[in-house]
Length: 73
Image 1 (cartoon, rainbow, N blue to C red):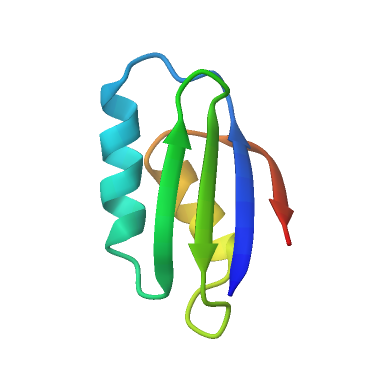
Image 2 (image 1 turned 90 degrees about the vertical axis):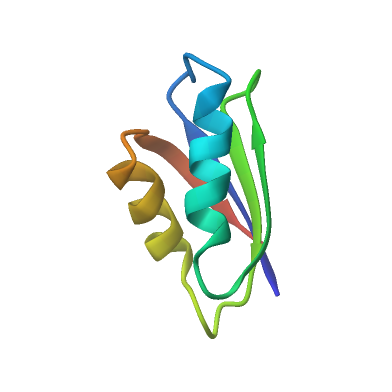
């Protein structure tokens, strides 16, 4: 199980949180997703055998939220 922190450009509305959480929650291999509105970060726990950090980043970006940085541990 890996943990990823994706820093986004500043989020403009609280509904962005639900949009991102819903999209990532549907991805196979994602165990937990938290979107931190004030810090514009997405924290995700995921199974690297099923999904990669780059795939998560791509999904977030396709929703219209560019990822500034990505850290995986």
